[in-house]
Amino acid sequence: MSGGNGKSYAMETELVLANHKDSFNSSIVPLYQSATFKQPSLDDMGEYDYTRSGNPTRTVLQTHLSKIMKAEYSFVVTSGMTALDVICKLLDAGDEVIAGDDLYGGTDRLLTISQYDTTNTKLIKSKITKETKMIFLESPTNPLIKVVDLQKITDYAHEINPDCLVVFDNTMMSPVLLTPLDLGVDIHYESATKYLNGHHDLMAGVIATNSKKIADDIYFAINATGSGLAPFDSWLLSRGLKTLSIRILQQQQNAIKIAEFLSKLGLKVRYPGLKEHPQYELHKSYTKGPGAVLSFETGSIEISEKIVSNCDLFGITVSFGCINSLISMPCRMSHASIDPAKRLERGFPEDLIRLSIGIENADDLISDLTDALKIAGAIKEVDGNLINLLK
Ligand SMILES: Cc1ncc(COP(=O)(O)O)c(C=O)c1O
Ligand SMILES: N[C@@H](CCSC[C@H](N)C(=O)O)C(=O)O
Image 1 (cartoon, rainbow, N blue to C red):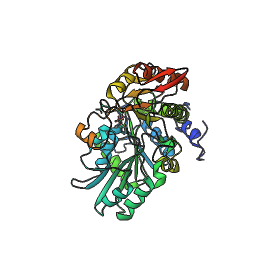
Image 2 (cartoon, helix red, strand yellow):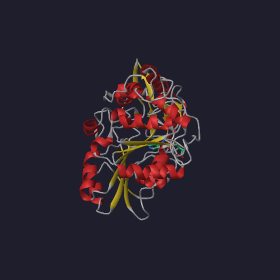
Image 3 (cartoon, rainbow, N blue to C red):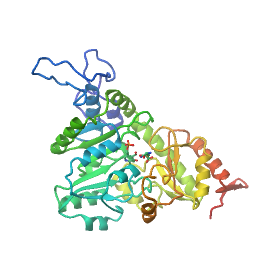
């Protein structure tokens, strides 16, 4: 098998090169669906003894991920939320922690800490103290698609407290569009349920770091609690990962066309690939693209409900980053766990529709949305032109 010479290649190439050694020279990593491994002798545990502590299929995936995430150490766990839970185990009770105020609903549910608008770099800076132990950032945020000045906040946090850990949720971008450890972030994690796997057929989370101390603590937590990804899911994720680049780039190309279509109709679209996005330049300055998730408002909950319910190609589904296009109303679905009063306070529109764009034909997707917008009474066609009825 090629790729075993230690050379580094471009991302697309690295993605298809998951090196492993096995006695039959199998072309892909074998599935070691085994809980236990026989020891060479009584006092020698060998490389593997028990799958909670380590499994060869999981190790190959983790080594592969380290290359892709440009990390010294990587771990795969049972979900994105497990990744966050493992990271939280690095904290002690009472530690000062800061997070963004627009985070995925499940993250918001897990963290009961001080949350601020992370697009306001000045505000975040004013909140970081010598006592701050950890900062959680997400960008673009889910679902308001707000962009964080990751470099500035990371540098500032380390300046104020060199031991403060900057933790970044990269689920929206994936390592194809952003490798946050390159910007000095301490811990990169993401829900591999989304782009990394991309096929709606498993739940997983990844954690990456360049610090041996953090890696040792994370391994301890994973082994101690049994949160490592099971062999079959590790094998499936290894398989999904190989097409990550080709998938996300196609999804992104479709998303740009759809965002432009909706924006031309005069809808309020949130997407960092549109020049009217307030942080368009900032996002462009540190990522390789805007990704494939966007949200938009109609000004009416009823119309939004009708749009969501009348699409054919966009399934009403939580999650994002999968090969099929998905549509959702975050307030009722992915972010329903956030108290409605808190959502209101944060300017989270109840009529917001989130789209996760897949790899289908872009014109088919636009035609599907056009039909749904027409049925919902958001637009009508006059002399071949689409007219916005919401204004
Ligand atoms: C941005 C973000 N981070 C983390 C998670 C958690 O991942 P998982 O569902 O794999 O636990 C999600 C969604 O669930 C998410 O949208
Ligand atoms: N019922 C689930 C909702 C999962 S939302 C998944 C994803 N992160 C998204 O943003 O769509 C829960 O309560 O966690």
